[in-house]
Image 1 (tube, rainbow, N blue to C red):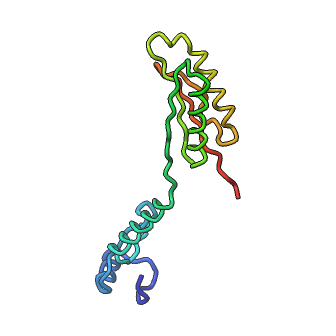
Image 2 (image 1 turned 45 degrees about the vertical axis):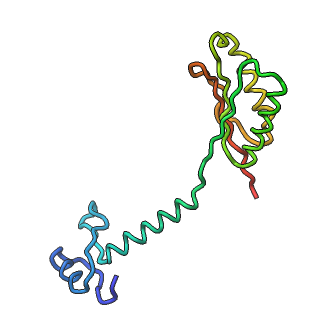
Image 3 (image 1 turned 180 degrees about the horizontal axis):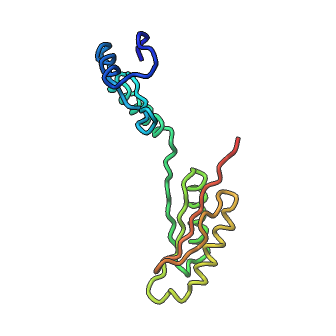
Length: 153
């Protein structure tokens, strides 16, 4: 806002002429206020700075990566340990983990086995992450989400 414009209550016509005099725009800040609040500013510059701020905020925002690990209801111990090591690595890297048991064909009769497998995984990974969603059966999949533990410094 220019130094030669004093604050006060002006009619729209007066405010527009003052803005035109300085070569800036009259921008409505709060239209619901009584009387409406306007400001004399360079609108293009304002939009540019706002875009720059938004871009900086977006860059600082953390991107959530979701890694998936698939099990069968009859996954044996060796495969389970192998996949568990991968899950640990994903959680250490800060990614969320989506572990699921996929039931093919008639294997849906083993849904208890699938739930036990996922709960065992959650228990063994509790040092690296916390369960965000308990095992839930959706169609032919039983899914569980584990979020990484954040390191408080």
